[in-house]
Image 1 (cartoon, rainbow, N blue to C red):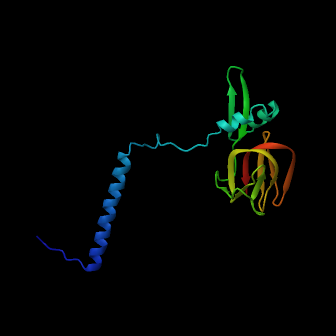
Image 2 (cartoon, rainbow, N blue to C red):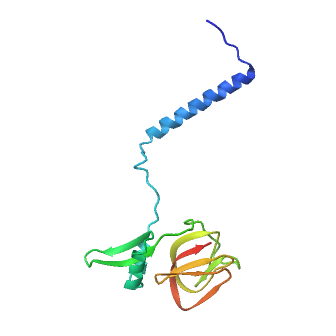
Image 3 (cartoon, helix red, strand yellow):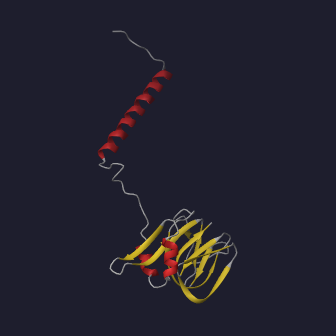
Length: 176
């Protein structure tokens, strides 16, 4: 039997290569044994059901038709017995969902802010679905801001303050 002698540098390289091989095989067998195939791994999809129900009665048939036929990604709430769409949401967005971070309660001069009984401030960029009731004033802060209520998206330039004649329920916000 012929003996092979390796220098300390080559021994280290061989040990690292063997370790990497073991790790690679371990990762392969672990992923094969987890019981998840590419077809049954779930992808997290936002649930718009609560938001759709909150819009019932606040959107006109024309607004619903415009959203439903926009060609965008949409969410619809159907009443199959009545053969009618009850509510519609345009979910297509250029923002990263949930990239906004809540500031407080409270707002800063640079944050997106909605005023009701508690100031609701958000920093960062992205979009967020939720329910902010009785909002009587909102501000964009130092970025472009979008606010959705009554089935419409209102997008405003930075440093814009909007005073509403009647309190509204905002269901979507976005910040660029």
